[in-house]
Length: 96
Image (cartoon, rainbow, N blue to C red; front, side):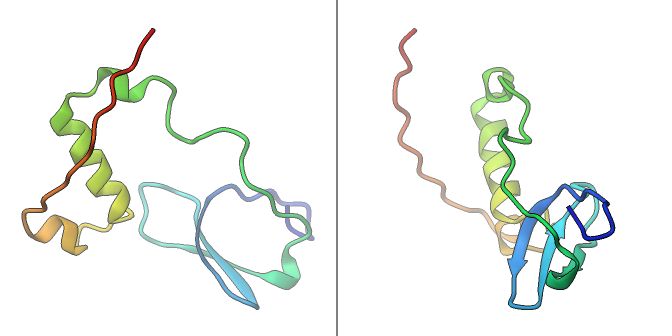
């Protein structure tokens, strides 16, 4: 919450002594920069922004694509999108 009463929700990208840079819109590469002096209260979200059960409907290839996207923070110029990446993930069986 900002000192002017406005509530800002976003993913923290960089934290500096005088400001915090966050992504408040997942579809935009334009970050939101907020001066620390303007922040009244800050805390982590209690729930994930990822919809529950999302990975249950994705194929293995789509999950790999999602992991690369998250690693690159959505930046299409990131090296993860520029070359073939070798991604090793140990899959543990899920009981239930």
